Length: 104
Ligand SMILES: [Zn+2]
Image (cartoon, rainbow, N blue to C red; front, side):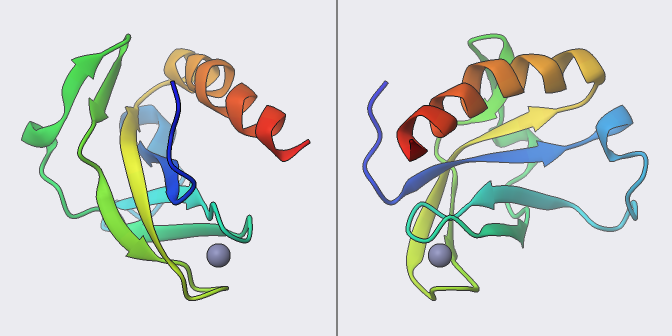
């Protein structure tokens, strides 16, 4: 899968994965494709926008945001809903392996 340079995958934790977090805080976490800073933005899209794709609930349209570090606009897509340990592991394997490779 090829992505344009201003797109980055986002992850939205829910259920078990969000147990340690303020329940009122519903954010999409991402890594800025411009500067590599970790960021988070309030999740705006409803759960109904998420569809089961490749074994994950994903919002393929994603959300637009701005990096707090470098102030550049970016697109967070897809946004992947992760709700338990098993999904967390699979998310890391499928999505983060990709990102690590491109950084090196
Ligand atoms: Zn940035």
